[in-house]
Image 1 (cartoon, rainbow, N blue to C red):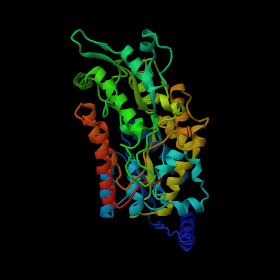
Image 2: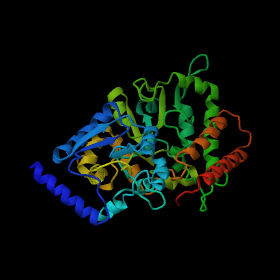
Image 3: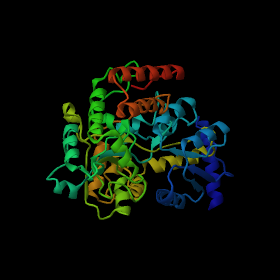
Image 4: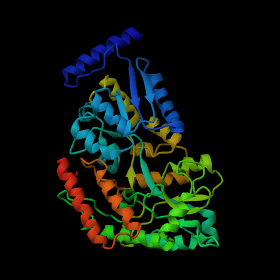
Length: 435
């Protein structure tokens, strides 16, 4: 059986070469190596999905290597010693991997196999390509939503989740309790940028702000939605007191461990991704909580139900081997409804195709279902891809640390300076965003 299959593999390679899709896979190279960022429990769940594929494809043996970050990926690309397939949690780096050719363009394979990329929602299509080069595909996705403690809500007389940021502030104040010395005990909602999943990227879709204008220039100071968002955020920080909030955070518990503040009922509401459903089940199975879309700017109520979308990306390094077999694995992991539903059930990330998000194989859970609806909402959005990777976000986040600490006197002037810095970096990188 193996000899017959090997002969077919060689023939397939010759056909592909004639079609201009030169396969680097040969009969001698039967082992595929895939690098992924997952570790521990999540890595084991990924290995189960790969094991199913392995069992159905006896001519390929797949080696899975976990705990891979983008520094390791970049080093492998530069050294010429990359694996056959690689995935990353940092979708912003598509703007680096695609134009450099570090990850190959998948368009010829998608076209040959008649795969319509519209099977992936718009936000995921956005962060897996740069300037027409689709060097990645989404492998599950993250949708950000709202978590709230039902028991604390009931005690405070609150009957539904807040729908606007102003309501969120009102709720946060009602749910906050302080100790006798004035220090914070239970925080209603922590808006501090840098705490848990509080990133500026996660908040941007709630107000409909634009990172760049039509010409690709940074528009933080020009778009009034940014200043509305930041004044709301700092207003709630000031209510708690910057220093008191920072002190409370030191005892809030690590985001990825059992002492998490929400699970211990020291945090009544939070923004977080769908994966928290699995973490809460594993670490705090008795906590009474609900999920909903994040509240939005009162002037943009049409955005309610949408949210921030991001996720894992997967591609084929240019200096990897076994390209045809690598593509078959990538295609299976990203387009097979059964594989996506199985993996989603294992780690509770959102399936990254519309079909998988509706799959009957998904374990029913109303708290998780909130995130599949956010994911498929046409108004959900993501961070634009740039040749800077995540550098423009790092520049903005550095400014926000000063802003929330009360060290910025003029918000508009500060945002204009951030715009100037980002534009300078973009010019140096020789690129711009994809509209």
